[in-house]
Amino acid sequence: MKKKLGSVLLVASLILSLTVVGCSSPKPAATPATPTGEPIGIGVVGPMTGWATVYGENVVQGVQLALDEVGGKYKDRPIKLYIEDTKAEVEVMVTKLDSLKQRDKVNIIIGPSLGHEGDAAPGWAKKNLDVLMMPGYAAPQDMTMRDRTPNIIRAGWTADQVIFNFGQFVAKDLKYKKVIVVGQDYAYPWGQAAGFKRGFLENGGQEVKTIWHPVEMLDFSSMMGQLQTMAKDYDAVMYNGGGAQVIAFWKQWEQYGMGKLYPQLLGGANIPDVPILTEVSESFEGLYSSMHYADGMDLPANKKFKEDFQKKFNKQADAIALQGYDTMKVILKGLEATEGKTEDIAALEKAILAVKVTDSPRGHFYFDEYGQAVQDIYIKQVKKVDGKLANVVVKTYKDVTQFGPYESIKDKYMSMPPDGRDYPSGNLSEYTADITKYLGQSYVDDLKKNGGWK
Image 1 (spheres, rainbow, N blue to C red):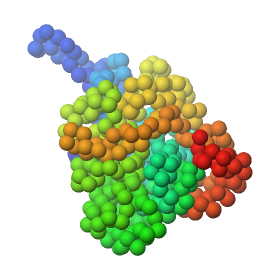
Image 2 (cartoon, helix red, strand yellow):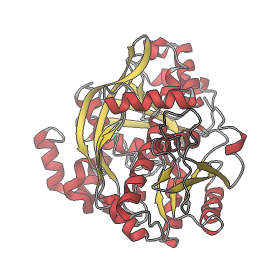
Image 3 (cartoon, rainbow, N blue to C red):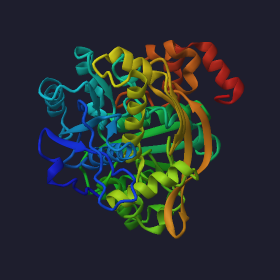
Image 4 (tube, rainbow, N blue to C red):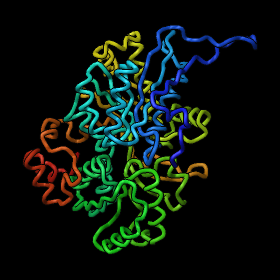
């Protein structure tokens, strides 16, 4: 699962110079043109080593693929990537961000890629308003909400945005009433659980029980025993982790015969990621999850993206790589609009916020006033496609903002406490009291009248 980028990517402050692909010519001896203008430096920060390597490595590879499409340049100016390993540690990330700005003089940074890194990023960005930060894969909603700063623009997702409607789907379409959410104990799974609770409890669900485990835990035997004793009281289990933890959890789920006690496991956004599908058994087929991308999407741009990624890196593309790819493509559009003037960050921010993407492998998206992508959210189901497991779209929610169903009352939504380990509550009565306090009795009355969200 955790393929290494190669020692070249692991050297601090390494510069990857990307040059133009050869110009067409009938003469075999033709020499490719080389960009001659002032280089444009772009930093990339993320975990390149350790348990979360895939979240840094795949973002970088997506960025590289996007640059390949333009010959590694903007007009006659080569684009250089300065890649830094955060080691999945906030303190290291901050040090690397400082180095990229002070030593390498970059004005644009792609990253970070993890939830806890994303929680800390706005603090740095607010002190460095002359640097544009575009998250690689980090999904805390407050990066573009309560902690909003104009120099953070996210072409990707928030943990809540992609799962609000999954909670609704599980309650209304699957008709489950009580769900157990098991996940790694850090910011990203907390955000996913929060968004799921809102969608589930506001659309007919009765309870969401959360069980958190250490981030790098691989032995789930005692947890399986706990889930076995809870089966009589709950309808389903949703797992929210990443990488090796997903594989270990699934193998032990099968080993303990959990499928006889619960229907097919539900997945957080990262559970059926493409690399994981190559490591699990065929009984993984049927798993539901949700995200802003599905590898099985039947779009020409997605087909090309997957083919090009496979050819370049000899592995399958996934949502993480897509995020690096889309982010770099948006930056390129911003450079076009500002004629490459990266030192004028305000102008670059304005140009990027005006971008409307119509040809992403995931479909279309555009930005809201807070700098967050507005996009379709897909309910996915793992199915066999051409003999291989893939995520196939079974339902689409159109143009979902980061506020989801709360778009018309976003100020009230932001008045609520931010997502936390145990907030919001998964107890229906406690949850209802909380939204009554912050969103108002009329909001709760409308939910009852409409049977949930309209």
